[in-house]
Length: 317
Image (tube, rainbow, N blue to C red; front, side, top):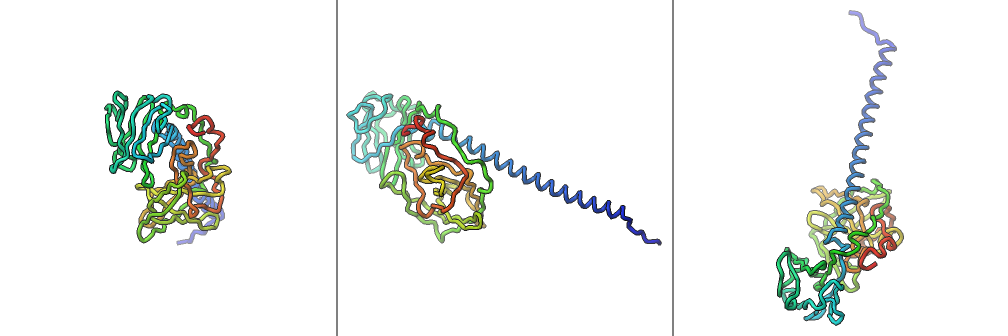
């Protein structure tokens, strides 16, 4: 049987077919990359919307109107100036008193005081603090308060559901989205999780979170390390970088990541780095970035900070 000899036309046809396959494969890969990028950017934009909505919610950090430390056994409160804790004018002149007990903070309203827990008017009651499973919120007109416990001390955190910031707060500023700052890393676990010492924005008030280990990642050929803190099913980071005090909040920023799998791999998306609550008011107890978590690099991703933008919009500024 005679052998068929490929012609030049056949070779050209085959080469064209191969080139077409390669081009189609590359186009599909580029399309997939573009889709992934678009999905990631859309997810970040949605996170930004949720971030602002959370701040502006009635129980968000923009409604804070006061933080009062309870440093003696009996503390009176109300809007009258002779109270130990002077509430805003919207409060009754004399509401009652807080009493420190071995079990926590007891609230003892005056007869006739209109204070509620949910829909129920309350008399003397132990206010479960925010470290318990069921913290209690007390309401009085447009005001509300809870008890917080920090470093063994109790404080009353006051909110105003009619705070001007809830309707006038400006949009949050951000660096442009840069997916190169979505970096993969590894959690190097300690043999056992341990408590670590950190500071807060309040002088003398410490913070001792549990750390499961250190996140290690590379950027531009250099290795960086961040101490991670346990936060339910996620990891929490309080970090500083060379944008602090210039473009971002001076005390550092916050960042969450999903907990690592068995291989220890994690993703740190610095596009989701954000200012702590103390950037917007003086009534927060934010941790600040420890020297262990201050990176010697500039991270131009995530939330920006401008004190001037918030003047007149928040309780403290």
